[in-house]
Length: 267
Image (cartoon, rainbow, N blue to C red; front, top):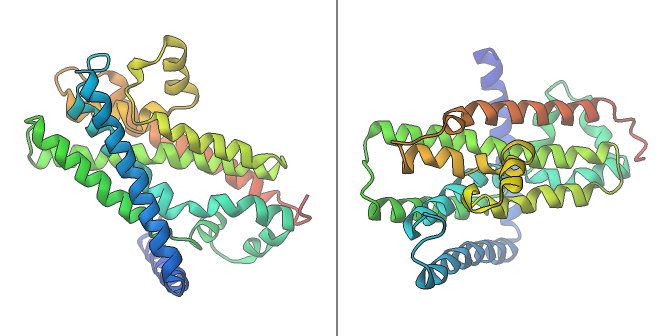
C-alpha cells in the first residue's frame, strides 16, 4: 500500500472513530456500566487463577505466574478484535435486512469501511488490565527486561491478535451464506476462553484441534513461549507470526468473497 493511500485510510479512520466515540459519550451511563462489567469479568478470571493455585502448586508443569502471564497475554492479544472489529457482531443484521448494500457504493475498501464504523472503547480497559497482569507476572519470574524482549513481546502480541481477528471475521462472514451465522460467530468467540490455558493440558486430539483447526493456541500459548521459555522455544512459536498473518488473510478473503457477492436482497 502506498504511503499516500495509507495516510488517506488513517485520516478516514480517525474521523470515523471520533464520531463514533462522540455518539457513545452521549450515553455515558451505559458506557460506564459496560466498562465496569468488563473490568469485573477480567478480575474474576484473575481471582479464579489465584484460587486454583491455592490448592495446586502447578498445572502440568505450569506455575502460577506463568499462567498469569498467559492470561495477561491473551487479554492484550484479544484487545484489537474487541476494539476494532466489534462491528462483526452486527453484520448478520445488516445482511438480513438488506442494509449492508449501503457499504458497497463507496470508493474505499469494503472491509475497512464496514469495520471502521465501530470502535469499542471498553476494550481499552481490558488492554490496561492485561498489561498490568503481564507486568505483575513478569516481575515475579525474574525474566530479563531489555529492548529485545520488549520488541519480541510487542511483535508476538500483535501477530497473536490476528488469530482471534481471523476467527471472528470468518465466523461473522458465514452470514453471507447461512441464517444461523450467529451460532458460528458465537462459537468462534467463545473459543477465546481456552486461549488463556497452555495447550499441553489438553488431550492430543484437542491439542491438534486448537493448533491446526481452531488455532487458539496461537493467541497466547505458542507466542508467549518466546518470552517465558526462551531456551526451549518450539518451531511453532517462531512461526506464529506467519500463521497469524496467513489466518488473517484467509479470513479477510472469505469475508470479501461473501461481501462482493452480496445481492442486497437480505436473503
